[in-house]
Each structure stands twice: as structure tokens, then as C-alpha cells.
Image (tube, rainbow, N blue to C red; front, side, top):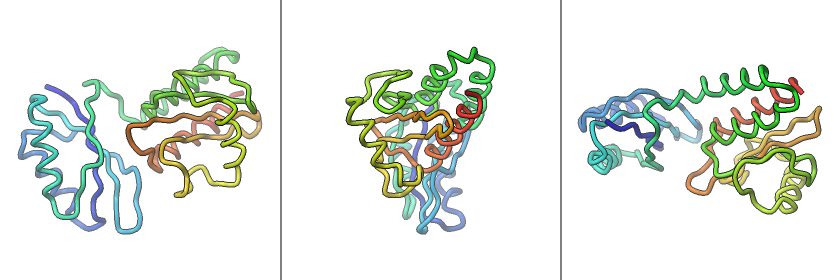
Length: 204
């Protein structure tokens, strides 16, 4: 038994998700969770957590879902069988920050952001100074300049780069940022990061 997360683009029409779920069932998959990552322009991006009897069925699952009219599979990845629901994981991260010692909260935030967005790296910056870091981020001077140059953008603006997300801790004068190279960071993930940054700011 394995658990996979299937990220799909669907037409925004009644029954489209039901058709996808039916195709998943046809390969003996069990849908454990659904999260809507983006919605608009007659398209929906959903992330489905699916349990499969064996890894051999992944390719067949992709083919079945792709066969639904107007549906495209963006990404499929294997995750731990006990992977937490992203919303519960975000609440757990907030609780962990609140329960930690004040001088350790930024480290907790940095690790939580990395886990929540399944990022390759995450970092908390004050200007060009690294306050906390997980993984190997881009050159700090470049990242700091990029974030300063992007301050006029909304954190969920459609024109944002697809591989970097950030949230500003306005009162604390900090920014938490993260990135991943293997798949697009979608709107709901950016919203979750922004809210977590606001919570951290209030706790600090």
C-alpha cells in the first residue's frame, strides 16, 4: 500500500471532479483527501491524496485521470502514509510556534514553512541577514534584493515566480521565504504561508 498526491488541472464544470474520482476508483485507488489549490479562469487546480494497493498502479492512475476530458495531471508524488492534512499541519505549526521559547520561534517557523510547502529550502531574513535557514537557499544578497523589489506585489499575485513564495512579518521587519524546483507553488500554498507569517509576527 502506498500514498500518492496527485495534482490535477480540471475544467470548472459540474461533475469533473467526480469523473476523476471514478477513474481513481477504477485502478483500486482510494481518495483520502482533496484540497483546492487554485480556482479561476474556468479552471481548478486540485490536489488529491490517494491510497493505492501498489506502486505499479501509479502509471495506470495517471493514464486514467489524463483520459478525462479537459483534465491534465500536473504532478504525482509519493508521500508518507501518515502525511498530515495541510490545514491541520498549518495549525500544528502555529501551535508549535506559540508553545516554543521566544528565541526559538523563528527556527520553528522556518522548519514549518519548509514542511508545509514541501520546499527545497526556507529562510527567515532581516534585510540581507539570515536569521534562520533550512536547506540551501539561493544567494542571500540576490534573494534579499529580489524580495525588496517585489514588495509592491501581493504575496498571491498571479505574476509571481512559480518557484518562490514568501510572507512578510511587517511588525518584526522580517521576511520568511521558501522555494522548490520540482513543481509550481500555487495560490492556496501562498495564502497558507502568508497567514503563518502573520501569526509568527504576532507571536514575536
